[in-house]
Each structure stands twice: as C-alpha cells, then as structure tokens.
Length: 126
Image (cartoon, rainbow, N blue to C red; front, side, top):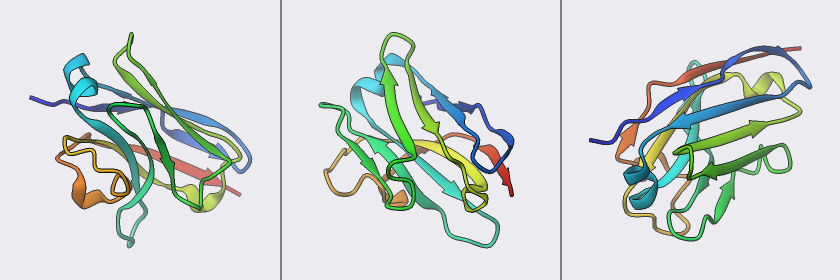
C-alpha cells in the first residue's frame, strides 16, 4: 500500500522559512508523481507544487513561484517542499499526495491524486 507521512509544519512569522517532508517508499517514488497541496479553513484544497515521476519535472502554483521549491531525495525516499518568504496567506494544512497516472499538465489538480498523507499544519503570523 502507498503510505505518505508529512512532517515539518509549524508556526512561524511572516518572512520565515520552513521545510516540509513527505516520507514514503521507494516503490511509491518510482511509480508515482508526488504533489503538495494545501487547504485553509473554509477554502478548497489547492495544488501548491508537484514533481513528476520519470524526469522530475516540477510544477508550481503562481502564488508560490519563486518562494517554494520542491525536490526529491530518492536515497531517503522523501520529497521536500522548501518554503521561503512565508506569508500569512500561506497558512493552511499541507498535504502530500501520490498520483500513479503522472499526466503532464494535471499534477496540480487534487482530483488526479490517488493517495494522501494526513497533513501538517503551517501557520504564518504577520
């Protein structure tokens, strides 16, 4: 079974940085694209960033481009989301997810993903 475990969330001030981790298995990384999503209270879940399965192509939402960086460490079976210059509007529960289809152009769409982690809270205060 596919298991995804997020960690690294916390409460920080505006302008700070956090690095989220999504730990999984080697098999999951080999056969799935991995995406990061977030959901703020009262809002729909939105795609933040994703990395494709085969070539490691990365995708970012416009709201985080230039501030967030996704990366994959195959030796540690972990996908990271480095978040810099955090803003209060980045406050949300962050989830990582796995997508077996890995269709270019769809990796920021929550509906494309088959497996989800439990989420980690990120709170940014002004």
